[in-house]
Image 1 (cartoon, rainbow, N blue to C red):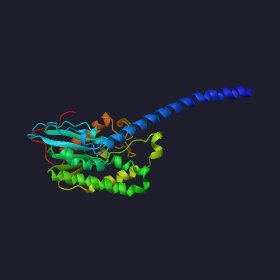
Image 2 (spheres, rainbow, N blue to C red; image 1 turned 90 degrees about the vertical axis):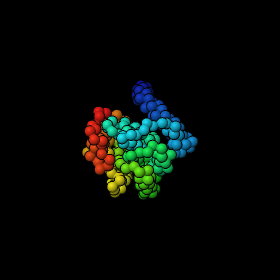
Image 3 (tube, rainbow, N blue to C red; image 1 turned 120 degrees about the horizontal axis):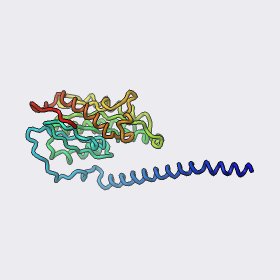
Image 4 (cartoon, one colour; image 1 turned 135 degrees about the vertical axis):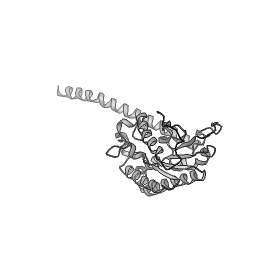
Amino acid sequence: MKLVKVSSLLTFLGIPVLGVSVALNYFLYTQLEKYYVELNQVRLDPLGLSYYSQAQKLDEKGDTKRVVIFGDSRAEDWTSPKIEGYEFINRGVGGQTSAQTSQRFDHHMRDLEPDIVVIQVGINDLKAIPLMPDERNVIIDLCRANIRQMVEDSKALGANVIITTILPVGEVPLIRKPVWSDDVAQAIYEVNGYIDSLADEQVIIFDGFSAIADEQGLMPEDFRKDELHLNQQGYVTLNEAFIEFLTNADLPELPDGSEIAEF
């Protein structure tokens, strides 16, 4: 009799355990498929040069200031603010490291004639640190060097530069914790400190990190699509801070009589 009860209990407990196992395996399979596709995309086009058509025709700038948002997925997803007198063009590519963005800079920027280049990049470098902890300092140094190179390349185009500090990360889900560490946040802090040091007459720093981060230095749940990416509300908040920043910046001023438009 007791044996029957134990067997029934194990059967009862086994149903939810089986369900969790099936769900976990499905999640792992979809993640594996996603990364396999991304890996092959990178192998076919390592720099993402085909991501934007070079045949795209742009309107004449006239008196409008042309601003190019350049970088990784956080740049790609950035909904352009609407500011009268400014034209925004996006040249972000999801999943890219600072090395990839730096190496495609000329290909994607040379024909745009930007007045201002906005650089948002770095998280894809730093999130690799838990996987290669012995390479931590090398990863950080290369990230800094690539950001500096993009700044110099922007200057060479005759553009002013706005570097945004690397945005915070959100709470990391349980499934990702085995390949994550608190050192990612520390590395973001270190690279952001370096970004601050790059300010000069032609380069200013937009502190996107502080515009988004909560009291714990994390991306708030209300602002995030996942642990690395902002949602629509997050970009609304980021744009509110960016518009205020740009209108008060020591870069080319808004044309006389212009006003901030709703976004």
